[in-house]
Amino acid sequence: MSDDQVHEPLVLDGGYFDVERVRVQNNGEDYPRLIIRNDGTLVQGDGTSPPTTVIVTDQQLAITSTSVVNSQAAMLALVAQEGDVAIRTDLNKTFILAASPATTLANWKELLSPTDAVSSVNGEQGIVTLDAADVGAVPAAGGTMSGDLNLADNELVRANLQDYSEALGTVASASGTVAINCETGNVWDLTLTGNVTTLTLSNPPASGRAGSLTLIIRQDATARTITWPASVSWSGGTAPDISAVSKVFVVTLITTNAGTRWYGSLGMTGMTA
Image (cartoon, rainbow, N blue to C red; front, side, top):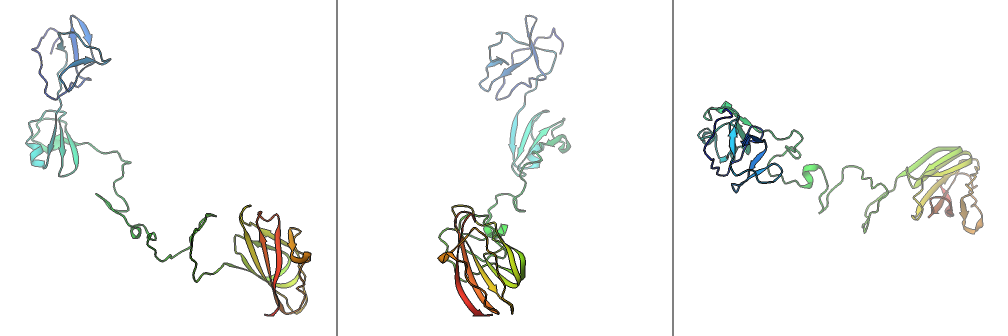
């Protein structure tokens, strides 16, 4: 419409101005952003009241309505204009009329959801209820593990252990430098084939937690020796005698300060291999 056209006052029922397409004018002064509230009052974009008399000029007035329908037929039967919205409860989707007439299905365009929205959970859609079996977890009521469980140094509280074992580290030919890694196992089986001149005890638990090592030491036909770390403090003040040939000895080491000090004792001695 042209600037010199004047129209009768508008009555809107639940609609709103498309503010990008409407320019209003009063006494030659433009008010390019006017909003009609749901209660029918007219305000400017800054919230202040506009002039009492408003003349709509230059552009068409767009009033958008939203309808809820339960089928395609009901949507195509709507008395609608461009920009009107139809909510389809049968599809759980929303469409907007992009072109007239509303009776043509192709004129209704679906309003797409964001591509990063959750469309399914564990392969299931709609109202999803998952239990432990759906995600390969052990239920709270109990079950059978099929693999290792790494607690990453966290506590296992109030456990009732039954039929358990400990990881076993093995050094089939212990001689010279021998490294014992607590993260590999707390029980180690050492077969001495030469004198152990350097024995390292690595990766004990953090200070403030107790860690222990059990060393099963096997002598061959020649008596071998072990040079123990200076951090080991022995029961009775002296390292045990493990010189008997072809015999087995069991030594226990305990630390509570991350290996700064190990307390050692000979638990079993002179056993037959």
